[in-house]
Structure formats: structure tokens, C-alpha cells
Image (cartoon, rainbow, N blue to C red; front, side):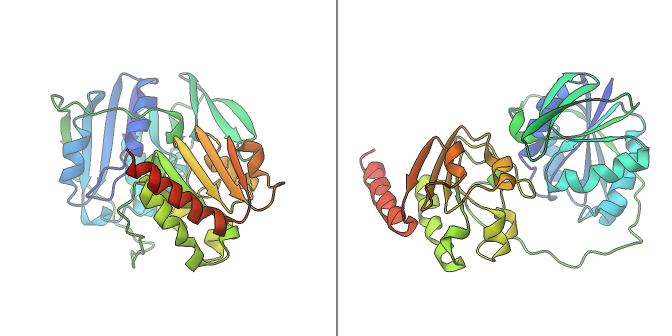
Length: 317
């Protein structure tokens, strides 16, 4: 059984999501190849070839794939994937954008958000915003899966390993759309999907200016910043902060939800967190049913007090 993993990267940084996908891949096959599609992406190749579970790194470096647009990138993946039994990618925006198109081009079913591998043809995935789990069996010749990264421990690199490199000479131009621009939120804080601590804010913060109150707390804890969809829709926080069913799925050691009521869509994205702390003025907010620790009160009074106590605690260490 041969498996093809699609590497998620931005031509400079290899995303940590790949390490969890590799862990899942090893449960399905001992023959794992990785497809790297991009442009001037040598740093990615150098890193990916150090994973000792990867047999071969297949590289397609072309200006046509500088921004990895789904229209032509999916065509290339499908052309390579015909020789494999499995195609895997992280269940991030990257994978959700590409693999449904790949599955359609291969005329097979798409199995998304896999959280458990039962057997070579049977997988578990959440449905109904995570309120139920579906066990899915596929008899397709090629199985196309996106992997929920929070469900699989990340695999580490081995400096002594060096996988073989195969370069593809053909590329497919994009004739249907073109890249214009992108807006990214630059931050020195940890990446949201791999952070051990996350401080998230909701509509209860009332404004974008108030949302900045969370930054001090996040910096003290060395945490990533998150937000509910309501906060993002209201313009309090950028879109890439969004945690939830239509945002990012996270599972940190500590999740602090501030001014978040606990809508089912948000809960679906963070309920696997090991410890959940909720701060909300409404004692009946649904978030308290999930939280390990809850503080009921005015967050604008609680946050400064919490920050003061944290400074005392860190100063004494």
C-alpha cells in the first residue's frame, strides 16, 4: 500500500501540521512519499526529507505553483496520486481547499477531518459540529483523507535520515484565475494550531480596542491569540484568529475563553483542549458546561486582576 502526503508550506516555512499527518500516515502504510509543490522551496525540501518515515520527496518547483492555487495544484496532485492507494493532507485551510478537488478529479469519495484510523479502509470523523462521531468505510481504490492534526501526535525529525528526491519536470498553468494579493497577520506569538496555551476572546469584549487587552495576557503566558467567529465577524479580531467549526481546530494544554458564550460551532474547535478556563459575566453561558474552571464576573475587572497575579507568580519563579 503506497501513500502520498501533500506537504503544507509557504515556500519558506514547513507547517507543523505535516508532522501530525505523518503520524497518521504511518498507521496506514510503510511506503510514504511526500509531494512538495511550490516555487523556490528548497528549505522545505531540506526539512521534509529528514523525516525517517518518508521514502521519497517528490518535488514540483514552478512559478505556476508559487501561491498553490487550488485550480491547477489539484490537477497536479491528481496526476501523481493515480499511482497511490492513499492521499493525505492536514485538515487545515490548505487541505480543505485542495483535497476535495483532488477527490473529484480521481472520481473517489472525500473523507474529511479523520480523527482515528481503525483499519486500512475504516476511519472515524466528527459530524454535527463534533457532537457525534461517524465511522466511515471506503472501498475506493484511492482513499483521499484530510487529517485533524489535533488528534495525532506530531512526528519528530531525524537528522541522520535523508529521503530520496524526485523532481517533476512538468507543471500545469492556471488558466481560470490569477493571484492578486493576500493580507496576513504578523505575530511573534506561537502558531495557533500548535500552541500549548491559547487566549481567546469573544463578542463580550465589545470592541477591537478592548480585544487588545488579551494581548498582554497572551504575552505573559507565551500564548497564541484566538477568537470566536462572532468576534471575527464583528471586526474585533482578524480572520486567522478564528477558532471553531469554520475556523481552526485546536487542542492546547490550556485554553482560556474570555467573553465567549460557547456557541456549538466554537466548542467544536476547542473542546479537545486539556484544560479549559472560561471568564464570562453570564453564569448560564454554555461555555461553563465544558470548562474545567470558570470565573463569573465583569471581564474588564477580572483581566487586570488576573494579569497582576500572573506577574507576581512569574516574578517569584
